[in-house]
Image (cartoon, rainbow over all chains, first blue to last red; front, top):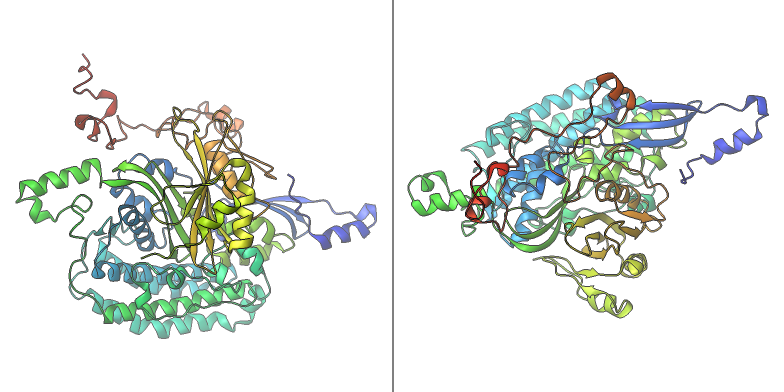
Length: 410
Length: 207
């Protein structure tokens, strides 16, 4: 390998040491099934005692060839595969994918559809951050945080189930709309969740924010400089933790985010603790957005009525009208008809920026669909970030990066 | 609806006369020669504020087309909040190559490894060009168009596993699939069905 991973201090120390004391490097394989690698990440370490001198992440244990699969199915058929990218926030992935294809079709969805998408994406953000926080807690030895987080997350999953019929793999968005409208009285339940959630969130964060053990494990650990964060293409709370104020919801609003008031928390130092603080605050801001959406919940259509070649007609029309039946048949078999061209769309997902690059030659199947996954880019800094740290600090670093291998390996 | 960088096309065409506008449905996009790609990326990063390399990937236009492979960069400016796309064709179809952009962005490292893994594009000057999603020694580049969805038989990554199990990787049982419409085919072929038994207006029904 051409890259020089040696840690300057270790090298100097080793050089100053008498020959007989020169420590031997040890190699350690962490993962793919290690509790702190959150899935199937494997890191091949070279250690000098307990200090990491070289780290080589080994990816691909969860590679399913999603991009190849996308080239072999219609745009609508790919929606369930987006659930399985960041499987902790499927609703946000569904939305990002649907908007990307809608940009290709130059299709506008009605305000109600946009509002529902924002609402579900923000709920997904809360649930994803709860999971990230709980797992981070476990990594540094705070078990109870995990239990508190999971209780709240479970309440959200019950709401998702009522909305989409599935707790985990929601497949909620469609090109040009949604799979269904929100059920009667559902938004009231979401509001009730928000009311009880905020005090509990304060309690959860209170267990960590001034906790001596947690501070010892995270403050000044795994510092990512501003320049490094940009150079490695970090996004989401990992980028903002390093003091870069970039949030696509603010900078390039999509799906009507410009209507809502919220703040973007930004860190100052870029250590594990800053990344934790950003996530904690983001949850509060998400609740703020959810409340605003519900307060100004638009009526009207929940799918694009004019997208007759893209969005399948309602069931009652299919069963009563010959034309609608034919139309539905064409959309299901040949796929929603798209113009030829290229688009690239990115959405601010819980883990960072999820991008879809679609190359279309027309018709119902993409020629090429590239998924720019935030976890993949966020992890690419590991070879640099781990070096010089103790193995136990690597555990903190991994917890604070909050990645999902489902979208990293695709 | 979306903001775009209106001055960018003029600036790029002044600096790089050989660059051409690339058809795009959203952000400004340019085609550039492989030789000028890195200079252009540096120009965009240093003089036009495109500080983020958001994505680097490749497109295979199928084995019949030449140039066959195109490398695509997506840049984002965190100050102007704009995207732009740069594309360069690989000159050699059999052994595609492209200069590396790892000197400009450290994050290009993994993106280029992925493009190498999936398409077999050799990024010249890359410090550590290995496969990233597939394992070292895997014989194919799966996102090339001739690679079937079901996969191809290959050896396991570990010879010990192969010796013990006396088997290798097998293709996925597709049961006649993929069941997906093919645009441009005659209607009866475009229908999702077991394609290996397909017969239509142009092909006779197999006995």
